Each structure stands twice: as structure tokens, then as C-alpha cells.
Image (tube, rainbow, N blue to C red; front, top):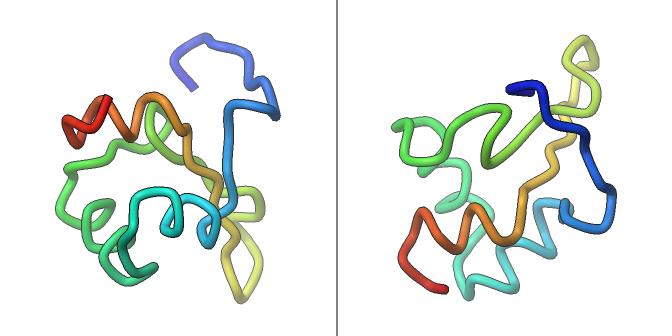
Length: 69
């Protein structure tokens, strides 16, 4: 994670991040898939070996990447 420690208060669940941005979960995943949002900077996976992945999104960094804040 680029040598940074994760403060749990800075990271939101996928549903909360999508609601904050006013977009769908699918749109958030699309931004991740096309590389607009970078792993370790904007998002990380809690359980990479699970059948159903769970992501966390960095509120401030995602907003900055999308020009919101």
C-alpha cells in the first residue's frame, strides 16, 4: 500500500462510497477496472482469496481523483 498505514476512518465500504459519490456500485467498479482509481491508493481488497471480494475506498483520494474536492 505504498508504505502508508491504513486508518480505518479514511476508508469506506463500496456501498457507502457509491452513495457518497452519487453513482452506482457498477460505475465505481468500472472506474477501478479502467485504471482511473488505483489499487493501494484509491482502493484495496479486504479478502483477495474469497469467492466474493470486499473492497474499501479512500474517501479523500477518490474524491480528488474524480475532481470532486
